[in-house]
Image (cartoon, rainbow over all chains, first blue to last red; front, side):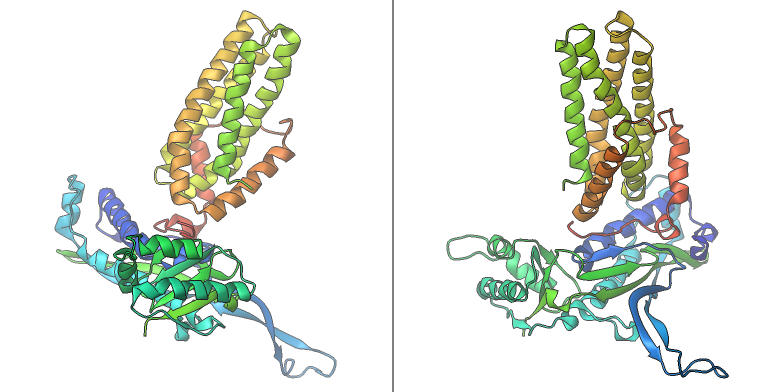
Length: 273
Length: 184
């Protein structure tokens, strides 16, 4: 169902929509760090409202006026999908330039919206979204958080310890390190005494990738073997139309999703403090 | 379990080797022993791609529509060649002409598919999805190994694309198409 996006009502020519969609995808994709760690279900569309948890809760009673002595009632438990929209504007003059073939139209506000939207998804998956009933990977972890600190020379020891914790818990690899932007920068610019890049050393320890993860406090070592973390998507990132005047078109980035941790043992949080 | 793009490359390698084997085959029996399984595999491979690869490419690829239209057109050319071969006595000059027609169409298709559609698909599909599709590809080839129950008639390329796009779920159709990034 595309109707709810109302794209056909926007005064945007096809060339403009193509540029806007391409720009949004280009700006969002590198920032969606949590998606690089988790399994995926969907997209199921805008009308998809809940994730089946496969669980039930007992109901104390049966409907009024019925006999409940021999009846046992249960109610299915689901995790409702949450949705969000991040508004942004595009200048009409820029859209007209796009129609003329311009390829350098300024989409600064779209970039800002892509940053905000990616941060919402990342924070929800990494650290949870209490109002939405979502528990993040870091908060769900059953392992004690390990200190990572800011001294990059100590990172190999911290990662070796984290991977050992996962192995001891029976969690197979490959393992991936997700780390916030500041920690990531520290890693990529550092070398060890012999000139060997720290990044390569860390990659060998975990046996997987190191991911730049905006929105993540500290770091996470996560098994990416599959089945442990599931992002259930209703409407994947889409752009809809709100209104326009003579100078600006107001649009929005939209997503609906739920997230669940199936195996809390499959991640170890790392703290910078 | 290999991912679907590796399995397709494996089939392409088999095609190249079996067409080469025809060059060395002598006599009707040898030609039949090489050609018959090759013709069947060409049919099954094309049908498997149309059932499993291209519907996913249309969901994920950057230039999927053009790549799919080209591929279905190429499959039609290959199927036309196989049918042309079947119309003539094995080893006759008309039979060899049909084989050459099929071989050229298949070589063009493989080069284009490897450089464009498969490259596009790899860039946009995580390894775990490619593995799962690889499993489905192998299952399809096993179930339809003799090609007898397959519809091997030509398909309208644009009609095929339209049919698949109509099947793509609402959430996919309206979105930016970012999808899963696991493993990327």
